[in-house]
Length: 322
Image (cartoon, rainbow, N blue to C red; front, side, top):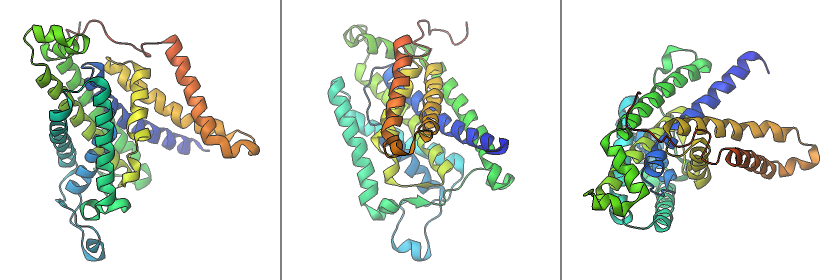
């Protein structure tokens, strides 16, 4: 492979890792700082992607309009798609939180993964909403006309990096404020936090909504990068569990660790593809299973030597800059 091809491939990996870093930052708010066991990340991934798709694309016309009737089709700019995805995910998280946040950890996990699958099945079965299993195609990309299409990924990587930095700094400022210290107190001991006069339910709700809005931005960025989405993308494996692995490997309770874990695990996830390509022909049929085994071994090595993740949780979080 020539140098240009290798560079283009690395850029595409960096884009996807950056998108997953945003999901990890959202999950870190909920789990790393508040202790909310959310296994329904794929639901917010799905809602964010579909929300921006239906906000930034025009209403269907002609033959296409006969089998899909989008409820939005506003044809608004990319930024409005991101904001709309965040807002809709925040509203959905608020509605979900009302009945679920009073549940214990295990029951919260069961309910959130069930709700996430419900959202995916709704988009899959309700053709009137967003074209059912065929999904939506032709999503616009920001600044697409500035460069040759084969070089566009460089522009999108810059956009991803800027948004990751903005989200990271926003979360850092929030977590290092009195509000963030209350979240950590709730995570450590709800009873003690309640005895200090804190409204546990409301703070949990704020954490759930804030994290969901960040995840909605991640879903929107994914949709505009791929330019096509369908319900089979938002499965628990790629929409939830790999994000949990990234956060655990990078360091729960540490935003730098969340970003680092996303890049390490995604590069590991894709790198094992090349390793399985070196297998003899007789083992090619088992390549997917061998790939999962390799990923598991590499992850175990990380957790054995760094049980708190690559960076681990920060003990001092009161000040943004010492």
